[in-house]
Image 1 (tube, helix red, strand yellow):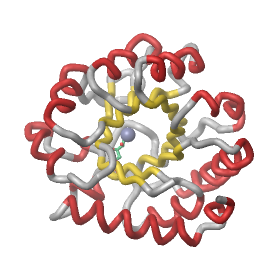
Image 2 (cartoon, protein in one colour; image 1 turned 90 degrees about the vertical axis):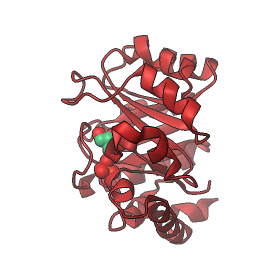
Image 3 (cartoon, rainbow, N blue to C red; image 1 turned 30 degrees about the vertical axis):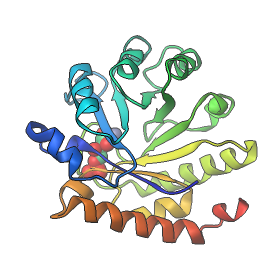
Length: 228
Ligand code: DX5
Ligand code: ZN
């Protein structure tokens, strides 16, 4: 699978979201962080903003729900126009049912793991998902330092994906930048969320291109990519 770069609008100017979305044209997806001040200690945006953003850009929306009760709320984000919806397994009451519901509504279904949540208990769920998100910071804020201790989990997840022959995308989110993206790609990630590394750059579109070049170079050399 080709490398994908998903700028996170958490680091964009929320008063100019349509312009900020256009500033990263060429990105594969726009990563939209939904936070409810309960699951994480921060509050961002909800369904009405996602609806407006979906109308304002042709780039598909990758909604990362850092909220409690995703079983109740996630389907509304598909209706609002998200093409991919990620719920946190730590918050979901019935992750299999929720993953199926997101797919049935027409979006890609994705599940996220906080840093302290292991992948192994969820091996049998992987076929229900289109993407797995491994958080490489504690969720809640942009601009945090990448957690190197997550690299073994990325590697183990890539091995599980290969073992089961799945078409599952493996996303990393948190502290992904020019200095960390190659390590993520080498470990097995193929979808890269970057907030501050894109919107903190003087030319966000160029930052996306540069991150893509780095990730492609590292994936081409990665041992896991030779399996395909
Ligand atoms: C953090 C969010 C991330 C955030 C990443 O909880 O899920 O998507 O925007 O920001 P950076 O890339 O700056 O770490
Ligand atoms: Zn995110």
